[in-house]
Image 1 (cartoon, rainbow, N blue to C red):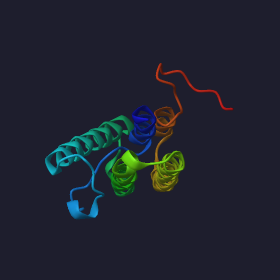
Image 2 (cartoon, rainbow, N blue to C red):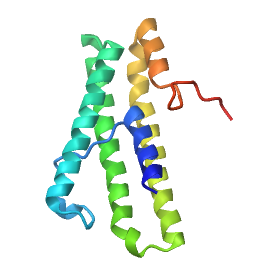
Image 3 (cartoon, helix red, strand yellow):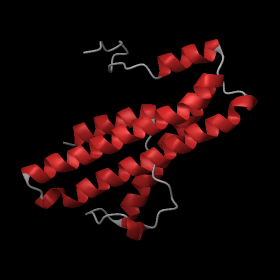
Length: 158
């Protein structure tokens, strides 16, 4: 189960990152067995991971000063998407102990739907940036967002 969630989250990290913004009060998050300190530590690690991804993608795409405003929209979308996915995973974690098979299927559907919605939002935000990128930048972006397996090989369309 955790592997499936990790795969979904990993996909979002590459296309949208995984982060939990600190502007959400702990009371708004679902209750889990984890202590507030453990949740804060996990959130901090996700924040760091998404910020690292944003920084690496910024450098890889060689964002120019003229593209900065579009890039900021992409980066903010990545942060927001990570928060939304994190909350969906937290909701699932909070209910997994007493969950039925149907509950588990529905919680996976909620996570998958959050991921799909987030990818659409990222695509929308990224399209503005992509439209003003140079040909070389577009090639790098095309490669960065291509669907690849864990060995780096392009995954065939089905």
